[in-house]
Length: 503
Image 1: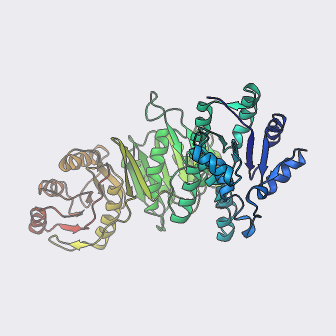
Image 2: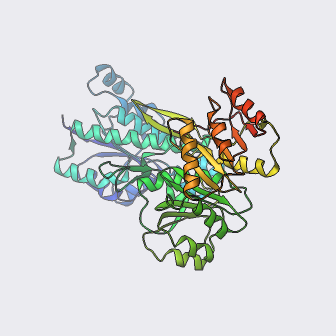
Image 3: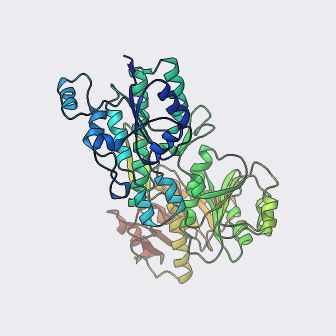
């Protein structure tokens, strides 16, 4: 059913592109109601409009906080034109019908980017705007709501083509967008007050494709808040997944004074080391599994220097992330135009919550923080100081491997890992096999497991390879079996009380 627009309420913050629309409404003899700065703008176009105060018989008060919040405004928007009681009440209280609502919202997100002064931010929380948008959207059967200046030109064309009338389908489409605008606005305010990073639909970035070429993919968020991209092609879906994993791992070593280098591949850390110099850290990380490093995402906690850039450039990698780059190093790294180089910003806002779409809903959980709840030595001897440092390091690394996971560490270098296995003993076998593949001697290495040992088979297998210090959460009804073996064979074992499953 088509309905002709005979009256419009216009109240907008941005006036871009508004002039042709109000001119079109004027040419079609539409009565225009407006407020404050919008009213002045319309009158400057040589077009008469009715101040909202003439409807409400009440001035704008409280520094402009209350202008449109009045029954004469909302009654004109919400009144059902086919409801006799509504029409009678409108006549009784002299409330005019409003057929078109054009409202945008105070620039809350833009203000957040410009200032941290809470007083200024709070004043950009729009009250009347979202209320009018929702009211008009609710009553889409009787009126049109325009909530985005990008739709002004389209509405002009529509009004010209349809002699000032709109169809029910068109009104419903505009209403759907209005509710999306209001939702995104509320999400931004929620993020400010609660410190969360729920993403709005405004922040949509379409990927070339998803995990595979036949899948569509998008990213909702603002990467510019986290990185400055210094080189390379656009990040892909899979790049972003690995970049997130690499950044989460790097956060574990934010306070580490020595250089840390890590290599991520398919959401698993495949190489990581701590060394006195950055080049040494890179060499040790790469040596842990040079085969898997091909095409990986690499990250460090220190400024990349020329010597390290020369070393990195010898292999093919997708993404390099660092807090800074020396000019000579950056010149070397930029030699290949497709290399993605990201400079992570200090205190970049990162998600505190993770989401996973399953079945007909979404799983939500806190990000896995911390390393261990306790440090309980339960083996046949106390750990040496060197073992303690390596065990703590191993536990963090294991946390960033897919479950079931085992990490083998020697001299603060990942020398073997087993991840994504269906049994813990398979994960251990895989980690030992990887270590032997690259000629690592496991005598003196330490072992971390992301969850408890349900049997003593892993402890026995590790011991047979020369591993004499183990860290695991504990919590199995058969913990005593593994503990007993450690005591009998003078092995060190630490229980942390904190499991780190990662599926």
